[in-house]
Length: 637
Figure (cartoon, rainbow, N blue to C red):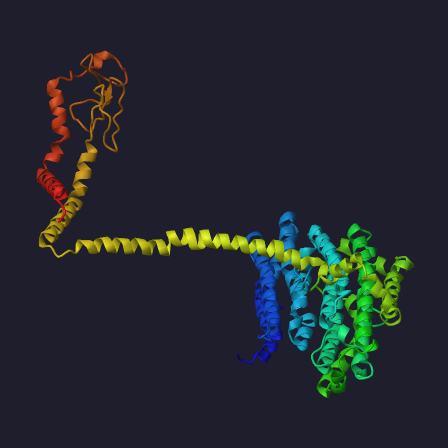
C-alpha cells in the first residue's frame, strides 16, 4: 500500500475551498471526508481502524446527502446558490421554506461537527494516529459544519424555529457527551467526548444568534484541544502505545513537561477563570440566561451541569494518568521518556495560547461595539442579548459554572486518590454496574443504532436489491432483453435446417409480406374512405374520417361530398322510401328524390369505384393470402 502519510496535507487544501462566496463550493468538503477516511484507516491492517473509517465515511455521507437536498431546495426557492443572492432574498421568502432549508443545512453541518445522533464517528476516529486526531478535532473536520452555519447567519436569522432547534440540540449534545465521557477509559476517547461536548456549546451560541461567540469558542477550543491530544500522544508514545488510563499512573515523575502542558489544557477546557476557555464558554452560558427565553434557560441549565462534569472527567484523566498508583508494567516505566524537541516546541506554543489567547482576542471577537467581523456575520437586532449578559444577570448565574467546575475537579481527585474504595462500593451492586455500563456504553445509543436503524436499513436494502434491482429491473432490463435475444436467436437457428424446399418457402413468404407492406398504403387509403357496413336495421354505421355519417334506428344521414346526386344532409327513411330535405325550412315539400333500387346500385358503384382502379393490387393481395394459407397448412418436415 502506498504511503498515506501525505494525506494529511490534503486537509488544509480542501478546507480552503469552502471559504468561497458560493454555497456549491461547500460540496468540496467531500475532499475533507475522503482525507478523513484515509487517515483514520492509517493502520489499515487493524479491523477496528477499518470499521472506524467506514463509520466516519458513512455517517458523513448521510449529512452530505441532506446538505445536497438543502442546496436543491435553495435552487428551487432562490434560483441560485450564491451567498449574495440567497441572503438578499431571504427576508422576502416564505418563512416555512426558509425553515426547512435551514434545518437541512443544520443536519448536514451536524454530521461534520458531530451533533447528537451523528456523533458516533468521532470517538471511533481515535483509531487514527494522535496527530491526525488533533487535526480532526481541533482544526478542520469539526469546524467545517460550524463554519457553514456561521457563514449562513443571514439565512438562519429569519428562521426562529431553526434557531430554537439548534439551541436544544446543542444543549442535549453537550450534556450527552459530557456524561458519556465521564466514565470512559481510553485516553483519547475521553478527549474526543470533550470535543463533542464543546461543540454543543458552539451550537448553543449559534442557536442564540451570537455567531461571534461561537467563532471565538471554536478558535480557543482549537488551542487547548490540540494541546490535550498532542500531550496524550506523547504519553501513548512514551508508554509503548498504552492508552487505557486504568493501566497507567504515576507518570508525573517520568513526564513532568507533558504533565504540565496537559494540566494547562485541562484547566483551559474546564474554563477556569482567566484561562482561554473562560472567555468564551462562560460568556455563552451567560448569553443563554440573558435571553430570558425557554431555550435560553434550558441551554444554561444543561451547560452549567456540563461544566461540572467536564471538570470531573478532566481531572479523572489527570489523576489516573499522572497522579495515581503506577499500574503499567515495569518495562514500560523503564523505557518512558519525554518528547523530543520537535514535539516540545508545538506543545509550548499551544500551552501559551491556552493561557493567553482568550484574553488577547475576546474583546475583538465579542466586545460590545466591536466591528471586527464587519458585515460577514448578521445578527437580527431582536436577537442581541449581550448587554443583559454583561450587566443585568444575578451573581449566582455568573458564578454557578465556576462553582460546579471546582466541585467536579475536587470530587475526581478525592474519589480516585483519597477514597478509591468508595468507587468500588458504588459498582459492587447490580444498579451501580448497570449505571456504569449505561454511561460507559454512551447511553447504549450505538446498540440502538445498530439493532434498529442499521439492521432495518440493511434488511430493506436487501429486499430492494433482491426484488427490484436484481429482480424486476434486471428482468425487464438487460437480463430480460438478453434472454429474449437468446430465445429468438435459438428459434431462428432452427429455421436453418438445410432443406431447399423450406428455404424456398421462406423466400415466397418474405416476398408476399413485402408485397403486402408495399401496397398497404393503397389498401388502407381506399378501404378507409368507404367502409360502409350495414347493421341489423339497415343503417350505415361507418364513414370516412372527415365526413361523418350519423346513424339512428331507421335513418341514415349522408355527407354531400360522397355522392353528387344527394343534397346537403338528406335523410333516408326506408319505410317512406322518400328522401326528405334537412335544409333551412325543414318542410317535406323540399323533397328532391326517391331512393330506389337504381339509387342503391349507384351508391355501391361509387363506394367501390376507386377500389376497382387498383384491382391488380387486390389480385396480388388475395393470391398472396392464398399461398400463405397453403404454406401454413403444409405438414412439418
